[in-house]
Image (cartoon, rainbow, N blue to C red; front, side, top):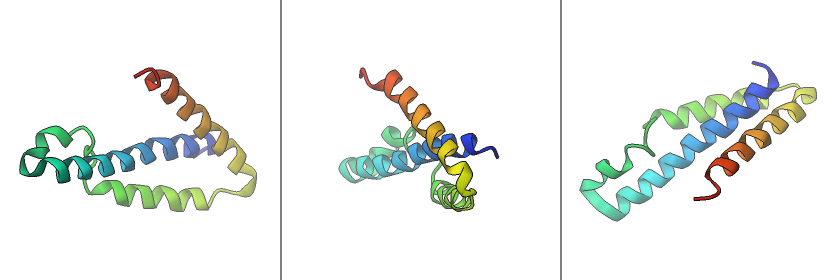
Length: 88
């Protein structure tokens, strides 16, 4: 993958990982009926951890010269999310 895609993937996979944390908190609060309210946040289910670890290993193998491009792409995509959702 080009470095930019690696940075963007980190933002997207990080969002999925965060969603699973949100889903667990909702489930803890609402109990057995929580599945109806956590479907969106728990979309990747148990695979999210494996996907994150795989991506993290890929990021750790990026050559030093590609790290700035990955970081810039991640910051740019995160900025898009903030622009789109920051007004909520």
